[in-house]
Length: 356
Image (tube, one colour):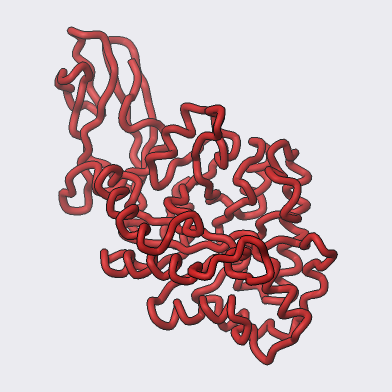
């Protein structure tokens, strides 16, 4: 006997059942010997379409117990109600704009077009932006050279801006794929200590982290958790040879499962994993609305929270990656979200970290 839906650690949203007051009633599906009489939380199951099902109410954190004869299986599932109809915007690989500000010393960080654009998004749409930053670039600049002159300005923007650790550097690719605990822990503080120095204590305070390439060992993820990052965000896809990619330490089965979810909790490690839904620099502006519509139609259980991510280098004319319509790609996702009724958020404000 085993649970087919949900599975241990699933975070359920209201598309997966019916609401009844404060409860979400879902149809639990289990495998059990045909002809048996299993129950889930005391509710007798019906046999349909090859599985046993029972409708069970789900609270914020709910233990499900299936019984069949002398056999018992238990799992725990969750609801993050505050994460329903929310969107999140993240910028990866941030270092170019920091170097340019350090070199030119504008009167305001928002005089730089990169940061100025995201302040405008906040003013017009209320968008909150999470910047994942490197410690150093490939030309020798590192965060120690960024001045503390803008500390008050960063701090004043903490209601809509977060700066957090992304990686020590852009290269090598998949930099933390085999990282031990100590390397991850050290690199996190290498970056974070500088953020606190030049931007203050409030602008980095979030439980969410988008690691560079989102691949590491179980001890590496554990180190991020111990640094306060118990929400870890990736793509949860497969590479060209069918191996999990941008998926932390997950195996194929776990990656396939995460590919359809807003959140999943590794209860052994006490880590919440969340999935980026669209990499904005990979799609033209006029393609984005229809892509998002299709996601909502085909996978409602994975689109209660829309995580959008893009990369700083696509904004910079100094790089080979520059896209003239990059701002329009971001705007297309934000406008779609606003029109569909999604509200901006920091993911750490809507995920139930207190429940793990």
